[in-house]
Length: 254
Length: 368
Image 1: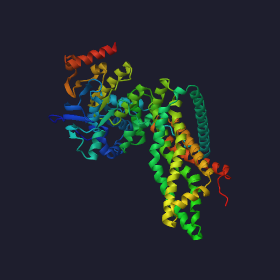
Image 2 (image 1 turned 60 degrees about the vertical axis):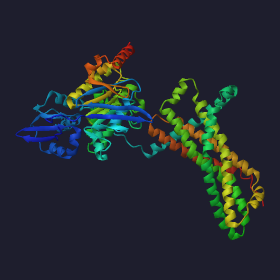
Image 3 (image 1 turned 90 degrees about the vertical axis):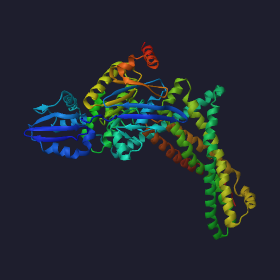
Image 4 (image 1 turned 180 degrees about the horizontal axis):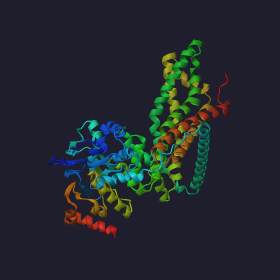
């Protein structure tokens, strides 16, 4: 802990994303430090999910670079890539659960991939993760198709947490959860952050979760991060986009 | 920052240091487990106060080492204690239930039930088709012409090259092999009879059916299956659009119409290949072939071949749609049903072919 300046968890410099012949991001900069919970906000179609996919290495930057845990994912060897990806968990917007596997095996999958945990250990871990997202062990037998939308989200979160990641990427984590569950979810994340020094980047439209959880807010607009800073500063700031976002959300709530 | 998890036993106290997380433990897991399993006498105090991080995987490891009860003396920060408490709360959760593999008789039973269910589904689908046709006869404006045309194009026009190629090659092969035999008997000229009857009556329809079952049957099952997985079928129903008229019926009609034409096309190509091979191998000119084909192969054979095509086409689409509608919303079910669809379709085609052979045994065989 006595290193002077800890490496950033994610650092993007001059990032441009090109899909087809359309720039989704152009010259985007973002630096996320360990322990930050960054809320990524922006209008629909502004490229928030695409940015998460860039971090995961599912897309390749057209220009610029992304450093994950201080290293460039694109140039790392396959073994290193795997090790880096094991340090992060991703919650996809639609859950992306393996539809052929029951809930239990979905969560156990990344653990089994480590090939060094015994079944009893895995079972306890899976049940623990299920309990964390307020699901019962019986739910482990259900198939993803039998789950309600909110349950899919929670199972997906449990799977993202399975490997005890240092970096958690969440795409709309609270969409489809009732307000009560969103609150518990925020508490869970805050607790995990305290225990594990978790870093979180989350895309969200949920102002409540943002206010409760995020330490920092990044506003994605005009193909880049237009605002980035501590939550209180940004959310009370008067950047027109932030104000619009805030106003829009309040209208939606009413 | 990255301190490996370590433990030391000092005068009645087990001191844990470093980062006790899954990622940090994995490289030295077997050593840690061995140390935890053997070297600790009961009644030792546990000092976790210098552990920097403790995740639930490590908490489970410790909890198991403690044989699922709290050690008498434990020093840990409130945060780590909470992680351990979470594990402790879980520990009396049930053990995994073991599923017994079904016995032979049970498995046969399941198979029979599955067959009955499939038969029922096929009959239901057939009945639904008749009802739809009756409905469309009364409301002709709702006929899904666009879908039918699209399916004819996909299953028919797009299949022309591959059926032509396969037909041509089979024709060449059969002609070549028959020629070798016929030359021994000096019966060269009978190549026309052999090729004509075998290709037009038997090989053409069956070959095309196998190709189409693999090509269009699988794609129909997969398409309907994915529509079920993504709830598109439900979306159609929600808009008041009948899925059987818009999705199933066009496929059934299109393939029924298309198959005889494909059979005709593939048979022609096979004959062409056979003629070419006969010309090169036996020196039989095309003109002789054309003159004698009519005499050697009565037109009944063509009728039989084309009606086989009609029946095969309907069967393939029927089976494909049935299995497509049976797909459950998961990838495993999708792949299993697609496989079953193709296998069932090909098996049924061969069965029906045998039935055709028996009932048409007196038709179209030239008496010399």
